[in-house]
Image (cartoon, rainbow, N blue to C red; front, side, top):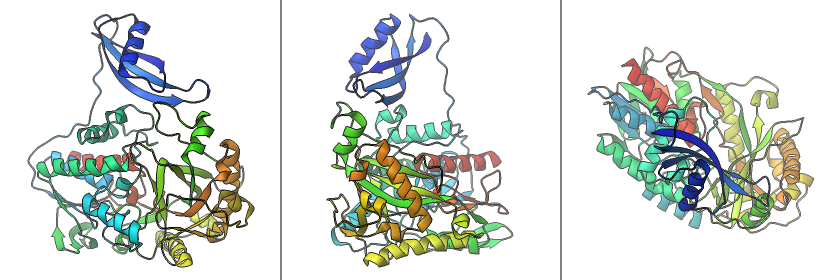
Length: 511
């Protein structure tokens, strides 16, 4: 039995039988097994858009090397007495907990939010009434902020192949589509994620793990570089090890950690707004047609080529999705995007953001606390300007030219639009860079300037970063790990989960 890796072009609406026939003809064999290792859409020639596949084929009829066993994550199990308390049930916290529980530790997860079913009901009420729920919202709860997103599983992080494979296998086992193992831009969809996180929770609990929802971390009791106890809304909780995965929204948690001596420093981040277009317009621009058999909806990733100013790019593009009120607090107005698995909605949206070095913008050095204060003040301002959760919006052309034309369009945003001069509400350096970026994007993608731009997009990544040692611990601390997006060392589902797994594996190795 030997393996051969081949590249194959297939039509966008191919079925497995057609692929099998193409493999047989390409290699001249009859009996074989195959596994798709990657699949990406090639739309460079709009007349011949196709899938490009890499396929591993194994057969007795082939000569060469036998199939190689892909090394996986090796989790050594032994019965352990150590108690681990993990704060935050997003990808970083959950996958750290799952690995540690598999290794024999006694793991408890706490999360200030609710389980996903209660959370979904609370979000639905918020979008229907505009009445914010501090417990059930887009920012906090089971699965983290990513549960109500597009569920993108792409990552630019390097050296996380084993951790990523562990996560993908876990998602597929919990009901995720098998295609996430090979698609170049895989996604789960928020509708799938709501079931997947429940199944993962059941797996964790079956191993003996515990999850406590609606339990907020308020403080830490620290002596001699070791955390002795977590003060929570449910009372004091002791443990031998503490993992904190706060996500990028829990600013009061950041401040508490800094107050307790955990070292953070400011880092570069990005802010901007959300752009929205008719999905048919994006399809036409990318494919030359409004529909493409076998492909859900067209995507885009744009980067400004301006030589001056801040870097501008699109981020977290949600094809066939909607823009949502993503705040975790009643006095903050921010937006984000989400898509369901089929990506069949009328609209496409994406963050359009500028990279920010706050010290450069302010012309002086800032510390971590000042970074948090600056960003939080901006988020509050957007709420104050509209007196609620309506999305301040203008046409992209209006943003470019600096005038309001009163030409707002229909939108997917559920809580209404308020026409606003966003270029005046955003920091001037950011607005100037975004104006240049929008001009360039309109040149790169036909019709881009026909869309509209709305809200404040401020959660692309954390504005601060914990100072960590080689074992993922905050410098000077012995039994504490700050992980995931809230650590400032990761962003997105895969890199955050991988960060949690790497930290957990360090603990296993230390034991």
